[in-house]
Image (cartoon, rainbow, N blue to C red; front, side):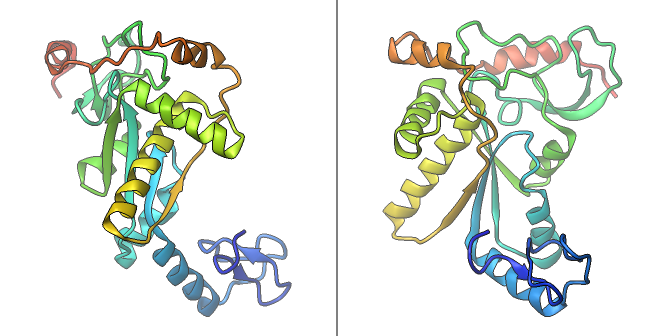
Length: 236
């Protein structure tokens, strides 16, 4: 755990994450003073949190924004080819194409949605997780959609810099984090950005081959297709 962002247990000295009420090692109650100190550090550090959509890394920090007034920003990154947040509608919809599941309120492109064949960047599901959808609908979370070539640009840059080949899904968050970092640099602002690297890309090397061969194409899912798909979504 980075120095200064853990709360030390008053009994055994173990460094715990700030959200814990008891020590993960010995079970002793954490002092409010220690927790408040680490909260202040985290609130200063977490200026922006970038997540591939559907990942719950951000949720403990969402509470601090809702309850304690923290200024942390939360940004969900998704592909332009499957833009459930940025182009979908907040509706009750089926979770499967066969329309057999219970209806769930979420941002959806319609359960009849089929991702374009040229899309290699993962994140192909028509709907967004209900909790993420609610946070976006209430303005707690922002959303950005990216073309897949820009996503793979970021993935390759990350791999060459960090020595880790990211999954295409994770690379959407990397693209957003790089853009946020460059914007902060241009504005002369100092920010700390947290992203979730949710998986490796060892099983996605075929997509990387297509990227290096120049065979990947960008595709922005048309709003007209979303409107057409909404005709099959139940009215509740």
